[in-house]
Length: 93
Length: 405
Image (cartoon, rainbow over all chains, first blue to last red; front, side, top):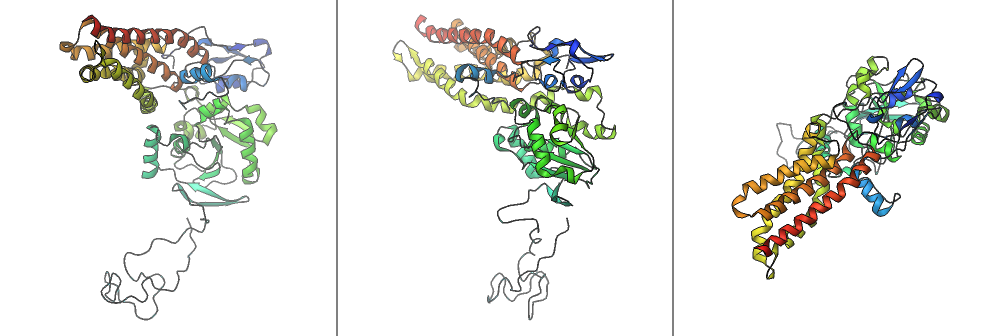
């Protein structure tokens, strides 16, 4: 997937390395290999590869990861602008 | 499947009939004519009857075509499903890919099995979108496993996880409702990796006593994953977006723009008729088709060319990729109609194709597995003004060209 890259420097992903206990769950659930294990800690290997799906933050038991998750879908975002977040629907999936 | 023999009524199907009717006294297909009481299993006329109804059918309920039998468990019979798709499954799959019936294409949530599952067999979790269910079961040839189907409201794993219908709470509730702890001896669920957006593995054990193991992204790797001792290679954990995967999404993309396109085409035809005499139907006939062609070339450029050429189109923002393919599409329409149009009209047609293509391409972000919502919003803030400007200038140039002439 390294051949397909999206906009750099936009992700809301934050990683607090001090809080990491090295369970490695983030490396298992991320579909873009954003995290990698380095010794007994996870490392943010490819921040711009993040698509903000939120899998890592949801599965980090110690809350070392935060991200604003959402659907990267233009029609959904247009609907949130027009109708508000509650009434918006993603028609792509 | 073992089916109990159900006795037919002792009554012949054509009792009382006589003469040369379809089931008269003439022996059929070489069978001796029935004399005396009609034997249960022998048809008196016409083709032989089909097998008796399954003992598992209930009034008001019909067995799905993919169910091949049942497995008795302490929680009652669990349907065993086929690992091959039948023609009806395939036809419905094509329909779903074309966005026909896609919003209500689902299987009943609950527990299913493949092969000969026993209390030690693995439990694979999936969504109740029929396409997800079919994708999983067709990879389970020669595998003995249980399939726990969640109620994701007929939405695929990744989208359902994003929308919150595939959630930790749903897994816990489904495990409890099927009584999984009484069916299997182990305490392990194999979850689809793309469900991790909605499922917190560390909360599952506390909630239902089952430990989560993240399976591969793709169902096609599940057999290898099971044979590897539930270990996924790094490649199995990454999403891909190959040419074939991208092209599979094109029919849905096109179906999504069909309805709004009718309105755009109507507007294009109306604009084509505006001129000195206010409105001319003759001008609509003369100019409308080429303007419509330019618009449609933009749709094809955005919904087909952008997905197909995605890695090779310059720029990262989809609206820019769409502008480029739209420029090409619009230029082709102008090139093939060069004898009938002037410079300003040509510019209008190209801009129309670019706006349509750019907008359609931007909408493809929702179908890709790598765009982030923050990124999409950023590109939309740049792209939409460009698209509106292009559309406005196109309309002004298209109408204005008739007044200038």
